[in-house]
Image (tube, rainbow over all chains, first blue to last red; front, side):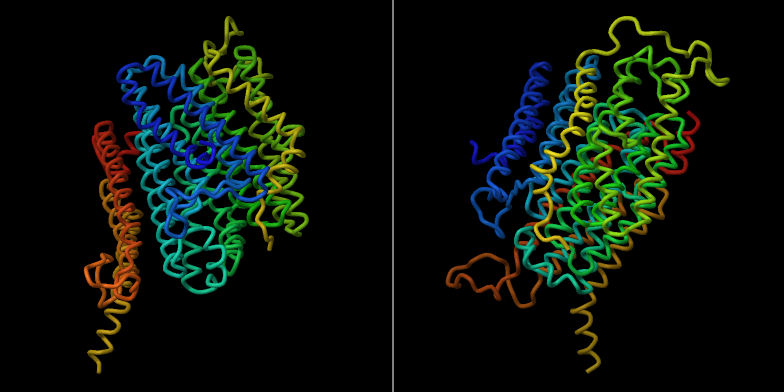
Length: 498
Length: 129
């Protein structure tokens, strides 16, 4: 059993997803039980795999059906992919838990469909993290994207249009990625990442190599929602149902950024055109950080504000990759974790505020602090981490990014990182101001809209628990950042740094 | 002489140019067309171009399928077409089929919700609500 762990953590969610509609046909609680149990099993398996890899001290390769590469598909758990699968499976458990009250009034068929699509998304994302084969990565990318399009479309009339637009843009991205690895295959005759580490770097400095790198970078940058290829993100995030959104917003863009990191640093080893491409991506990321923060300030809708904030925050990761020294790469990996935790938390909060009060726009938040005190307390922690105040984890990820930029002498990037922190403070303090400080209603909000103080429980326990777990987690991870880097992230850096 | 050169370029480069043009037609359709159904069709054109790219890369003239027949010796690589891109593209075709299926389902829902598939008109009707 233990020897097959790398494939089990991908197969279990896929099988559970396939079974869920069938089980829901007989009994919806049973379907929920099986799906939750499989998500927990995957989480336990991911943690076990990560711990085992850290103990082994070298990557854990698993040959599917015993076929060695380059004929068979290889799955590789190393400290980096171990961290990613742990993160994905952890959020799958939380989002499934959070989804409970959302699904309460739905029919068994709808519940079954939700569980099936959700587990397929999770399985696809886990596969993207664990695979050691470029084409297999494409297949898992499409599995998770297709299931995600259907999940997004479940949010009503507007979300259908957003999902269709995302489908078209996302499929173009996947097409470009597929064409890019086509060039890699034609140049080297292999698609296994381990093989390509040896074969690819000497061949990259050629017209075909440049085309391959550019196509892969464009495809994955669209999936990561890197400015100016972020067009699908704000609409999609504004209309998706909250439990799905917390999972998608926290995880999918980060997994694509991880794929970019894996291919450029571990497979291509920043040879030839890769470093020039990273330079371009870095400037786009710097522009994206400022653009995302400025657009977030301009929004009245809380969800849309968080969506534009995602555009900015994802660009931090790409900026870390572009700077490319060990401090910046530690910052990038830490920011993958920190932004997943905090943005997941923020969308859980946005979802529960909408669920409880029906409120989405920021001026309506007056009195929210007394109406939902625990949720708004969690929001304060999240805002602290997003702005980058210690001891929240967001401070440390930005700290390492800034240190990396200083060490590389990239002063423009240092300035962008600091200015963006100030801009982030502006748009989060606006919400805090309305929720905590404003006593009087503004002109355009009717009297009845001011919320009364809390009476009774503010949220069902199944929705409150993920929020509290993540808000405590954001602080605990921040305090424990030193052991986290020493014991895990340090080993998630490429072997040879440029 | 001239015919030889033309034949050389057509067989050596012509198909790659055609694939490139097909890819760009697909991309142009996605960007420039206003009808959502036409965008999905353009997406299919683009996917077909990528599939043709792989199949073209596998092609060698004067070779046969990767099936071992009686009396032929194993390991004679030069006698066969590379079967791996074909296997990869079977998967990619299935993926493209799934994408088209989901896209058509979403198109149906858009049409039922807004009564049109013209993107600007859909946006106008979204604004009105």
